[in-house]
Image 1: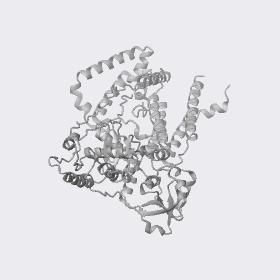
Image 2: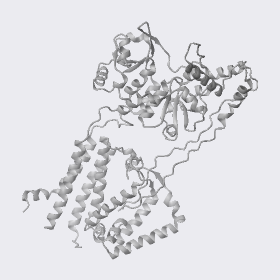
Image 3: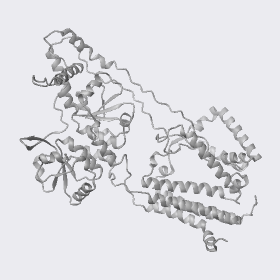
Image 4: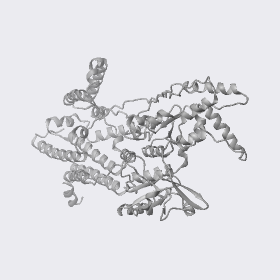
Length: 204
Length: 196
Length: 229
């Protein structure tokens, strides 16, 4: 009788264990979208590689222009053969299938918006999801007489030398007394609260 | 409490409450499985009962496998787990002292408390001994400090320091553990039965 | 009586348990490996990225700098050479390629400051923002238009023409005052010259007076959880 008692206990434990494993496996849902590269690698890639395409090279048959503006603006005017995928809808099933297809066909998607900044977010976003067949069209769009006008535009160009402008203005103002001190950044001391890992001591 | 409190998923104040609840269950299970008997605990050294060894190894393996699966499926993040810091010589010396105490007294610190709860006199003596030990240690702390705080290796795991694939490591560990269980079972059958 | 077959089956219970463990451990080895997901889910990241909340305008930023908002932390993600030429007052320089380094993390991943990222326009700062937000850093914002926009609006504001609305003039006055704060001097021929002069002389010293900011570290009571079996 004692032996039977023991058996019962172990079989209960066994059933519970298997049940836990099964529930864990059955309730698991694979996330729909997963990142293919981690942030460090993405950063290396975007700082090392050149991913800009200018307007002159757009006629390459391998390029598929994709308009990330809203459908409203797309209707107003868009590049030839462009496909409209608005940024917030970029993760839709149809759209991700489309990007996958492009990758399989070895075609390059050219993202563009009203300016390169608009296409920047969807670009880096898709890049992290593993679509490395993506380039950015560095153009600026404007409308003139209901027609879309696209121009090349530079990115991250410092147009104005601000320091000289300020110095210049001071000179022009003819203020003699102004002591021109460059504002030096005051060192801020930042103590970051380290995520403390608590020490559960012991263990027999 | 695992990854919950350090990542502020639940507030810090809950830790005492959770600790009490877990502690009650832990004590109950220790007692229910006979771990409050010093004969059973010491049996592992004399070869007539390997329950302690089996229980702790199984617990380690089950949680290890479970954690790896949960990590794999994305239910939790292994990297946010707490890894106990290694103080090499402190751990070795402390482990040896604890082992001697284990054989001599027949209890480890936790089981002695659960044995006190059911009123065993030897366990009460054992706990008093622990208290005396704690007192001596804290009085002589300046003397022990270099060992206690020295030889710090950081929060390393076996997988880190051996540099092997964690999945293979777990698999080999599981096989080794099960072979060990079978071997200890054979030893147990050869040793004269002790009734307790 | 209990079913005999069941009893017989259960007499192998240890073997069954052992095989389950080995099978589970073995399938861990055989499981297909994929890149560990890092940071928040793509859906979450996208919804954060399309929200206009993440931008700060140059006017708002100028206002906060002038009022010496203590919770402001400016991060310049341009190269060092650009940073040396000109940057916003009290800004820190973390070039884009270093943005994920371990020591940048202490600036970006904290909840004591509002971190404002900026570059020449908002291209590189947007990229930095996206990467950091994926890692779930909070309180990050991007200066809309970056330094060039800063120049066009704050440092060198355009005078509104006569036919513009009155709030355009208000905006212009604010921006002009702000530009004086940031060191630009105007050849004022009319009235109140001394006042402006005073203003100008005062400004460069004002930001340096900002004291060292020490954030009190929230100490958590550390209570070692003793125990074990």
